[in-house]
Length: 479
Image 1 (cartoon, helix red, strand yellow):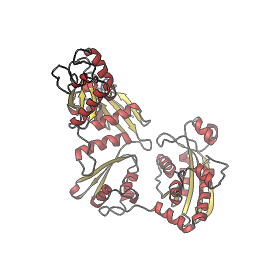
Image 2: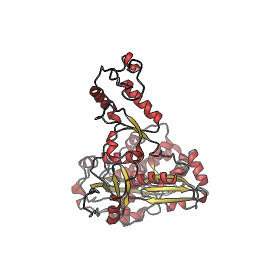
Image 3: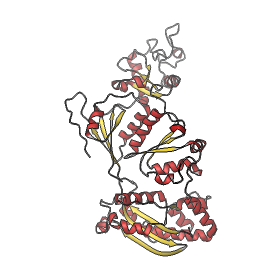
């Protein structure tokens, strides 16, 4: 740290979402080889209202930023101040992510070495549990008159660096910083500058080995950082070590967001069957109990989910990796709710026509006429309710438009009855996908889409598409 040209930086923002929120203040302290050579700060007009909680925390109001420059207006002088210098920030991933996003929107490429002072504090003082800025202020008896203002917090980081130098010595501090700033070494089968070419966008990455054999499919909100993590010493597992020894090529597929990356990763994992992925079980191997409450006399049937029609999904209960697991789960429910195993089809009738549990009082007697079929069916519905698959909440297919907030990229995903039909880049492709044949039900895709519909991210917009049996062929989902 003290043999580098370092900029200690802090940002204040409208919130914590890299995609939605914006910078409202920048503060930095510039240090050259252990000597402070300047400070700089500015308010920034975020182009949107500042939430009340942020105004209370920082003291920065909408009125204060109304006449402030936009980030684009300060991007060029700020880039010159930061160029060629190490960026030091507390929880640097947050500040660096916001800077990169704002620079990208302003058309400026920004990439510098980043030093996280949270990680540095943890490395220097592992005996302490808390390393947030407030905890460090108390621990080191520092006072910040402008806490939660960008320049005030940046000054605190510079003060901490000086205190740490005095506590552990300049050589030890510089050594710890050098470890955190050390660039990862590319695997032997890849070019030395391989990491520099990786995109820092959401997407899918594929590792290939000899003869272009697929080794691993992964996904991330930041391809570059995730791929680097595979080969870093801190996260080196046996699997990663094997991949590092075998990888010869890396393919990156950029997407508009994490939803697209997740869907594509599932799709590619099944298509390529890479050697080192924890293989997603195919839909043909996953089974569920199918039971219709309107026909309680018919016991639940164990069925492969890949063979179930969309209309029958409402009758499915549980997603099990094997028949044995499904049977064990149903038996456990029968025991917990005093259900009749004969009526459920789990065992044959005894000599007296009843199940074994009836004699011991663990069955209420649906098999012996002591409980009506309707009463038993009601209790089965209650017992199975937590296992029931979510019903598809739309009359037909939907389009999910996912927008990358840092670029103009938009992906339009077409989905119907929990099935991913594909991603469109034009109205013609959208129309084709909306009328395409539906693939088999796939468990991992169902889980992804269920999470999406439960809590849609800000980057996604959902629109119901015309039903396939209507005459409306004019499908459009223009940006």
